[in-house]
Length: 309
Image 1: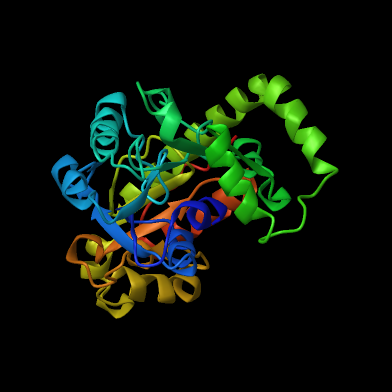
Image 2: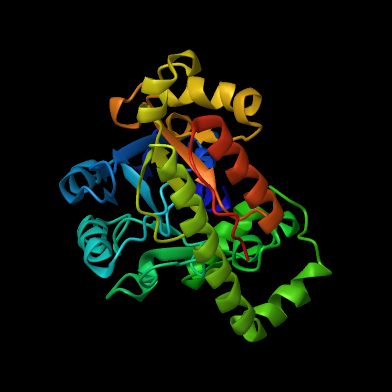
C-alpha cells in the first residue's frame, strides 16, 4: 500500500497480473489509481505469463507495475525469460518524468518458498535495480504471519517515497519483533530449507488427495497455494452448484473444509477461465492437513494415505 501511494497519481494505471492478490485492487484505488489487470494464460494444468498482453497493457498512462513472484494465488514462479520480457517492457517506457522507465513494485514475499526451480529477484535483472522496489515478508519467509513485519528495498529516492507514505499508514512496527527478524535473515537459512521441504511434502500429499476425487490440479512451484478445477466434482454432484464460488460456499457444510474460489481474485468474477477453479492452502499444521484431506476424501469419494510429516 505504501509503495502504491508513493508512485501512483490519481487516474493513472497500475498493471497487475491476474488472478491478483485481492489487496492490490483496494490499495490501488485508495491511491486514486486504476487497476489494469493482465490475465495469466492457463492451459488447464499450468499458468504462464502472456507477454503480448503485458506489453500491450504498459504505456504512457502506467504509473507502476506490480510483479508478484512467486505468485499468489496460482503458485506460479516466473522464470528469467518471462521476467526479462517484463524488464524489456518497463525499461522501454521512459520519458522526462520517468527517465528510468516505469516503477516496478516487486512483491516477492514468497521468495523463500520456492518448491520447484529457483526464484529470480526482479531487481537482479540488467538495469532493473534502479527502478524497482522489492517487498519482503518475515511472515511468509519464517512462518510468523501474525508478526506483520516486512521490508522494502530499492534505490534511496524510491524508498524515501515509500517511507513517506508508510508513516501515515502505521505509526510504528512491532519493535521487539524486528531484532528477531534481523537475526533470522542471517541465521535461519537451514530452518528455511527444512520448512520448504515440509511444504513440498504437504503440497504433494494434498495434490494427490485432490486428484483422487477427480479434480484436475494445476502446477504450483511456489508459495503455499495450489489451484484445482472442481468441474468433475460438480458434474458428479450437481447439488454443490455450477461454479467454484457455489462449491466453496457449500464446502464447509459438506466436508468441514474451507477454500477460496479463484474468481475472488479476478476483476471479472464471471471470467470463464476461472469459473470452476479453487485455491487451496497447504501451510497448515500436519494435524490440520491430515484432518482436511481425510474429510475431502470422504466427502468426494477420494483417497488419503494418512501420511504427513
